Image 1 (cartoon, helix red, strand yellow):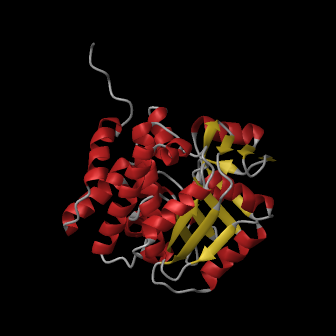
Image 2 (image 1 turned 90 degrees about the horizontal axis):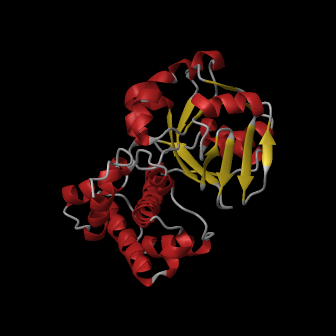
Length: 311
């Protein structure tokens, strides 16, 4: 099986390297210093699930060099969906499945407008990792899974083939007959955690243990669940409690990727996450005071670290 991983960061690198170690023909599409380090020294993954070194690595910045593949793991940031979607066209054949593994809820429809809906497979990745330095990924939590499904709900041979590849690589994978619901269930969790860890600059052990932060977390989970229900997504009423239990069961050292981006002075995915949820709340008449307040706190950092006024 031939697989292209678009973006070798905290999502693409752990899953892509696991598939490569299982014998799949995996190529990474990357750029800059990270690409150079991978081509020269390989890809190192360190963290709670163990340490391993993938070397040599098939990595390039030219999709034409890779050619047609069976699957694309599409792991770019949300602001790059349309641009990167145009770039990956040389990888796509009539049978190719492009699995969107972005945060948020709208990447599948956005990508479908670029490459065609028949190529797109919706996906949900659960992993907590980030680039520590070029060629080196640090994984901060043990839990790692993939959920994916055809946008029309069909459980066909294409998605089953990807499931078989994940099973061979030791990846916890599930084929979903309702991937839109799965995307929303992650959205409830992800927006709550990313917004609060970014606004507080704190890891989850602090968020869970501080009474005020915990109360805010619960309120965020409730608000985002309510807006999903108002939008017609069949989210269970007890989803906030289930997501809170999941958070309590995870390692306290974790921190959302948006918080990492903020601490590094990078651009934030805020417009497609918390701001998207607030806009949907306004559209459907759902009040979201906690989330809206935190969006106001984070918006000055949306395009990276702002210039501070003279003091």
